[in-house]
Image (tube, rainbow, N blue to C red; front, side, top):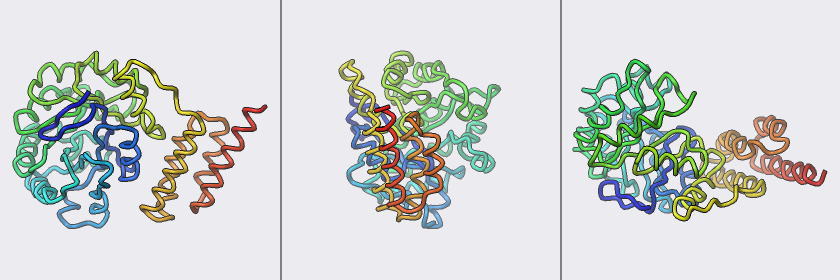
Length: 330
């Protein structure tokens, strides 16, 4: 099922969530190959871009194969964020600007950014309006159910975004105080969808298999689903989910060979992009996700976390293959 966000036409309504330290250019490219309808970047600091921070600039790099791509920005100063939007107008490979109003990380919240913004809805309105007016691209907003159980205001946040120029919104069905614990509240997504009439509503939270995506779409009536932790070490979920939504048929789970082959390819792509030292270091957590639940994964994870160098990491992955083959034979 296709979907439009502003003037951007998307092939389907299954999206990759923005995740710091995860959704870099390499992983976005892999997810796009798996059919993902829209990929989101790691969050980018508005102030970092203002001062031309080197790390921030790298986060803005988009490969042509991953288009359309949304860049997520964070901050709390309307004019600074509007200035960033004007800079991003020059980036032709960037299709959409997303504003982070849901990050629960303490250092972000302490600065009054991310999910802390939900405690100041007047400021939310000013930010959305300023960025929407400054941008020549569609602007989307991602936020949570609320800050805590005493401040549940996702419906209000959704209406503010809609009334101040946003082209779509994403709701994560947890409060900031929950972080990622407990169960995502799909009822709040349903409530937002029932009140926000003119722009797409994207649901996020607890989509770990294709059936979850269909259940969320059916239960909440949301226009699209966004997959976060469910795709870590499992980019295959996009292909399987899109196929299931289109046909009702569940494709087989990826085999252990599929998972290890993808881990090795991911390693090569990341090392080629970021260099051997950083690439191998950042792949440790990714390989840990790829092998989760496989035989001998606990002992191999210890080795992975101590491994340096591309060829050494390849050797560990190959050792995992041999261990699984022996386990199957026995």
